[in-house]
Image 1 (cartoon, one colour):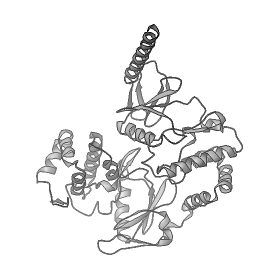
Image 2: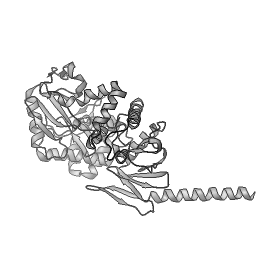
Image 3: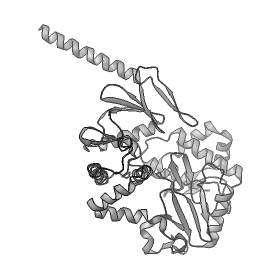
Image 4: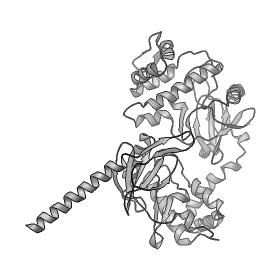
Amino acid sequence: MRKFHGIKKKKEKKNQINKTMVKDFKAIKVIKGEKTLEIHNPTHYPLVGSGSQGAVFQLSEDKCVKIYANPEQATMEAEALKAGQLLSFFPRLYDYGENFVVMEYFNAPTLKEYLKNSTHIPESIVKRLLAILKELKKAKFTMVDAPLRHIFVLENEELKVIDHVNAFKRNHPIPLKLLRDLNIILLKDSFLSQVKKLEPTMFREWGKFLNIKKVDYQNLAVSSGGSGEAVKVDHANAHLLIGKGHQGAVFRVSENRCVKIYGKTNHAKQEQEVLLSAKKLSFIPKVFETGDNFVVMEFLAGPDLNSFLKKQANLSEDVTKQLLEILTQMKKFGFKQIDAPLRHIIVTKNGFKLVDHVYSFIRNQERPLELFKDLHIRGFLETFLEQVKVLDIKTYKEWTKSPITHDEEGMMLK
């Protein structure tokens, strides 16, 4: 009986310690600063790492907690970790909440540290990396990639991969970050030569993508699709295509660049005027080169806002603030078409970016009717307008001075 009582007391003490630990780390505050994260840690848990999304604190010998500045990113990483629990290279997930994830802690060197000063990359490491990439693809993750600093090397060269916030958000069909990091430490050629030997099919797939930048994009064939139809693209270049619409088609030409080819030269001229004259506005993509029928601009890594909101139960005030900022900047700068359709907004790590500006200086439109329609379809229009009313009453009154109505198909009526 005493023995049982002793065990009971030990369990109670252990539960009490666990409750204290949870209370402690929840007191940690991580806020997105102007350039870096602002961290307030009143606990005894040491900071062991931080990045663009959050900060990591060690809770015990084998556990750590990542506190996020943005609760949405905490949800994204928790979902990815749950999906990868059966994969041997994923950290074990212990707990998660509104702004945190408790996971396995690795007291081991990163692959970047492990390969420091190496003149070649061991075949055993290459095989493990290829196995990880194949498993990620098989498990339907869209981010089939990982930088060296996110890969830990445990005993017997077992690899573990952390930071899965963008696992279902960014589309990396080949390991661009891994190859970039290997190139920096002069091991890319050593790695690729072994990939060619071990996985020739994978090597050929990568080669097609890596050679995109060698494509003469000025001669990519795009023709007008006619009234109300998307442009037509030469099938020979279909593997480079990442999107197309009524005015043009977009092809990825390198890791961080894409080119938009227009079916009509006047559409190219119209969009170029907007992108170049308004380049100081926060939501305008960076332009690298222009021609009679094309614009080379930054490739925006991230989902469009429509896809992003499909996974959200509520419309956050941060989304409304960014949309409102875009629309008010457009008006101040002199845009004639004041609108921001959800499919044209890309959610990037540097905030929202708005694409497709062919008619921004041409069409007169004072209210963002297409945005209203999109938010209505998602069920967020009422929340959006209520938040705008609090944030900017003048704009709210301008938008609602005429009724915002819609037909049965969700189309907004002026």
